[in-house]
Length: 423
Image: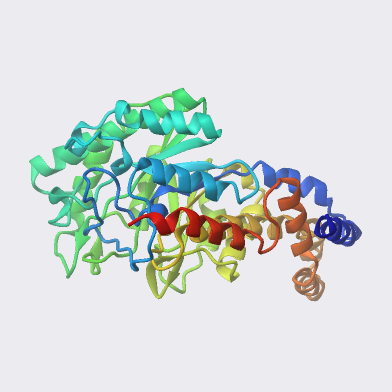
């Protein structure tokens, strides 16, 4: 109770400071409460999935590093870990599934044969825990992806296999949306590309466009599912050329009315993802974001409350685009406690949005319109030392989740009592 009193007192003082700038902290928290983060299931088991008892990540331009003990080995463990992680963060969120996480009941079900029945357990779990679901086709870690091409493959039998897989995934997504009365976003990313230079850039991209046009010829109600398409700069084994580049998917999305997915780790290290947001929103109704942290390359580190993350959130808020932004996480760190990675990543993403929402944007815009650039800079700098943390702790307190660093002990207890018992 003593700590609760301190948090309340600190919040009241912070609220008054923000009110001096014309910012209603309560209204800001109400707006933040409306934002659902789509939490990636694959952080819980290092992108292994449950296709077979020995499923493991292999190939496809991605890699999980580390061997921290306690990873989820089955549906029950992963669902328990997700539920526990979500209990330590404020707000109501979504869970993002990959196709390899179906319940195949010990049988070998190839990816061109998956169906809604394999995900009934996930829908039941989502209803029980009052979360919604998003979905992804899994076009990697499969023998038919070993040559480096899936939807752009020049082998027609391989291309047909992956078209059917994506068709199945879109069907499953629509079924999830109907079942949970909330639109499911189906995200499509493929690892297609070459390790060294190719002389057939146009040919592969023409093939990918052809595959996508066939896939998207079947439309589903927008209230059930929406497609997003995700680009990448390079991957492991596709360092020289990626078929689905940013320019390819930007052109495809804008001409085919498909949502473009921007992953923060999929660009040059010095390239600003934040700078792309306002440009794309001029031409498309909404965007999908994968929040990640790349170090030197697309290394999918746990999201940190750093300049890149803050710039991302600020641009969304400054563009009045929060209702048009679909925010998901995409990192997988196998070197630390996986629950801890979840909680840090979700909370930091929320913190970045809160920080952006607490900016004195109206005054900043006024200064800018009047050419008062010294005043604009001064106010931006002063905002950095306002008591943002007090508002965050209050948000946690009112959502009945641990404020400050209290979640550390809860995760340590979970590791000692549950994770450490997993072989």
